[in-house]
Image 1 (spheres, rainbow, N blue to C red):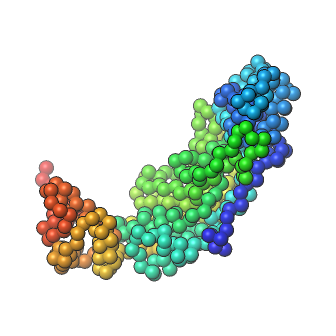
Image 2 (cartoon, rainbow, N blue to C red):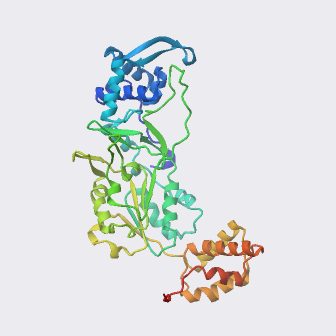
Image 3 (tube, rainbow, N blue to C red):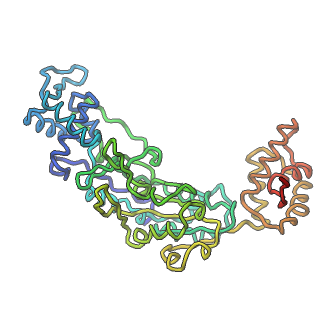
Length: 435
């Protein structure tokens, strides 16, 4: 299945309260809390606030009226297409305050976990297929050998776990970002999900990039939304963590003040990519981190726990990319390595690849090349480090030369002298400091 020829099936809007599959009292209380906190009165405003179709919202409002928690104001708002206004009764305000004391959550109705599971299947990361052309275009800013794409392509297309390892400074992070850019389709991220009466917020504007959508006309009797607006249409998410990653960040985060939960990082990355950069730099040993992922990687499900201690399963539909400067045998046992489906070594470029990168960076940054300077770099400088090339070095050296030219007030043209001065900042001499 070609990713460019397919589109993710959108979650359909609910047509009735029964289709919501949420506890009726929960829906009613979220309605009351939202009207109380946001001071909305017309059904169209309320529908937008709780992210439900207008008719379903009207059914909720009518339920509140029957229970004498909501009343009509008796006035038509001319600015809202002649809509009837509604407000909370004294009993409704009292119930809203009681409900807020139990949970501060209001706004978008949550999606039941079982309903969300079905949407995850419709937009699974394993449903896409990345072609060589797509991956090459996404990484057009990188100079990579064809042999590397031979390994990367099947790994990404499988939607399973990848371990990239090799010496530092050779683009493992850039390759991870290129994989993310190759996934050009959209998925639907729930604003919040519900399990056992508890609300877990998922949509995070820091993690999720919202796709541009036409706004519905609040005065229209028919909303144009073609999908359930409890979801946000986004690019496939990417979560990037580094040395700060801890095991606790993979658990539900409970807010004791709001009495709600926030989804952990791996749940936010559902349908996308979870990048663990600089593996081996975290406080916890790499083996402990991978042990935490064993069940999710093998069974496509994760296990989370509520404050009460109750455990439950959530979908694990994420392409996990581990990136490390250590050799895998130094940080994992063989059992852990078996759980990681693809192991790809990222080496530095050869001299030809280095020169391609160097020329590309110089052209991009406006630094004029000089044959004598290049000969000096390759014949004098690199032999001092046994001709070990790394992808970061061209950017580093050229940025250094630009900084020197700016300071000296001279044109951007490299020379052997500039090479020497830039080179001096690339490495630190191994010596003892006398204290």
